[in-house]
Every structure is written in structure tokens, then in C-alpha cells.
Image (tube, rainbow, N blue to C red):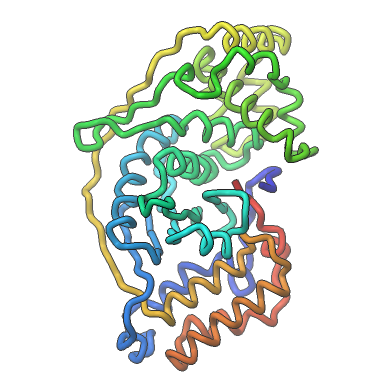
Amino acid sequence: MKWGLWRIGPARMSRSPHRLLPLLLLLLSPLGLLAPEAHAERPDWFELTSPGFRVLSEAPVEVARETLRTLEALRPGVLGALGAQRDPGAVDVILFTDRDTYRDFAGVGSVAKTSWRTARPLILLRMQRTGAPPRIAVLAHELTHALSHATLGRQPRWIAEGMAELLEDMVPTASGGRLIQIPGPTASPRWTPETAEALLTLDALWAWDRRPPARPELPRYYTASWAWTAYLRDLHPGRWQAFLTALGQGERARAAFDRAFAGISAESLWAGVRAWVGQGVASSTQVVQVTPRAASLVELPLSRSESGVIRAWVRLLGFDGRALGERRKLAAAELDAALALTPGLPAAVHLKSLLGERWDSDVTSLAELR
């Protein structure tokens, strides 16, 4: 991923494809704006909406429904672990059927990716090779990324990855999603005696955003992020929550951290985290009581031309790492095909009109990838 500080200011709606999904979906809606020919086509993709999510998918509808239900069940636990004071709003999800299709739009080297620079957080996912929905650990990890940014705003990469790694093991318990179980850190596969020996200092993690490590070094950074996040959250819960609250209020991360942990020296924290990881200090499982929301789910089929517009939009976001010129060509091809099927489709016409414009820099640098 390309990280840095993630508080992104409002972009120009007319020139920023990452802000266009709500507009495109409005233009694609059956409220008189969609050309009537589109409804005569066979359904291609479909849209599922629930209180907390909107899923656009080409996957079998039952797989998408199960994915959506799991995300809804995980959501309260993630928000509880983040100490969210308010609901950050809905998250958009695009679910692909297989690895090859996913790689075509998202690039290689991942099983899921999350972007914050869209109007709402956007997650790209794919089904497992067996045809099953994405693993719960993948959903929990990416949902933590999406909601942590929406809830906390500015945060260094080590905190974002640490929380996502920690909450991968979160599972909805029985009782219809009323309880969320967050296993203690000792349940993590990263909990080994070797972790303490290879542990990075907190200063090294703070520098991650400024000096990205070589790819072979990344596992050490993920492991250290998990260890420090789990340790601070487990052994210093009050200070950790004060730190997250300050982040959510827009304070600078390092200053907020130093204030929250004032009175504890860097040497003491270093000794504490090494002892905590190396000796396997016992930690308790957190169970979060949540208020279940109505399991309302609305399904809307999308024609080939409608889904072509969505695919063009994803092309323009740059998940796949292609150069901007190539992304424009691929998006133009998707839009031409959509307009051939449905001449005058408003969303396709509008998005195509932006292809020749000079977009703002957010478009070409969009790279918050897992």
C-alpha cells in the first residue's frame, strides 16, 4: 500500500472518478434516468444493499448475500474495538468471482484491497477458489481498514495494519449476531517466541510512512504492528482509547500518542512489549454486546451496460497499478461497449465526458492497497 497520512480533503466532483459512484448509481437507477433499452438486457451484475453496506457483484447471488451478512455481523465488533463514538456510514464493496478477474481490476499480490479516497470506503474482494465467499479473516481485516479510516481519520500505517491484523480473528458468536467475540492476542498465529526477537521498535514503525521498507521486510513490519497494537490495547487500554479518541478528533498521530502515553518512557514500553510477546502474558477475550439491526436487504439486478459503467469506474481508480493512459483506454472500451448496448445511457455518457479532462492528483496516486 501507499499510505502516509490518510485524511483526504474533498475533491472536485466533476473531475474525480473516485467520488463518482453515488452519482453513477443515481444515473443508473430506474427512476427515469436510465434508458429503457437497458432493462431489456439480461442481468449481468447486481447490487445488494443493507444498512451498512452496498455490494456490487458478478458472483452468484447467494455468495454475495452470505458475504454481506457476514460483513453486517462483523461491523459492530470492529466499531466497538475502534471505540467509535458514531456510525461512520455505509461501505461499498465490489465482489469478483475469481482470481483472474480480480487481478485484472486490482492487480497481483493481494486477495483484497481497500480505498479511502472514494466518497465512501470501497473494498474489492474475490470469492475463494472453492466458490465460497471470502474468508472471515479477510472480511474482518478489510472492514477494519475501511471503518478505522472513516472513524479515526489520520493514522500511521502501523496502527491501521496492527488493528486489522488483530481483528482478523474476530468472529460473530451465536445469538443472532448480538455478541461479537474478539480473541485475546495470544490466539494470534503471530504469537511466537521468535516474534520478540525480531520485533521492531516503535520508532521504526513511526518511520514506516516516510521510508517504506523493501518488500521482503514487510512481514516484520506487519508482525511488529500487530504486537505493538495488541500490547498497548491489552496492557494500557485507557491510554490506548484516549489515543484513538484524539485521532478521531483530527489530532496529529504522534502528538496524540505522546500525550496519551505521557509518563511512560520509550524504554519502558519497549521492555514491556518484548516481555509481553516473549513470555506469552495471558490476555482476556473481549465480548462486545451489540444491538442487532434489522436484516433488511434489497437486491437490484444490473444490466451489462450498467455493470460496464461500474467496471469503467473501477478501472479509473487505479487499483491495478496501470498507468493512467492505459486505464483511460480500458475504461473507454468498457463505456463504448455499454453505450453500444444502451445508447445514451446517462452514467456512461457522463463518465466518458471526463476521460479527456485533467483529473486531480488523487486519481493518479490512488494506491491504498493491502
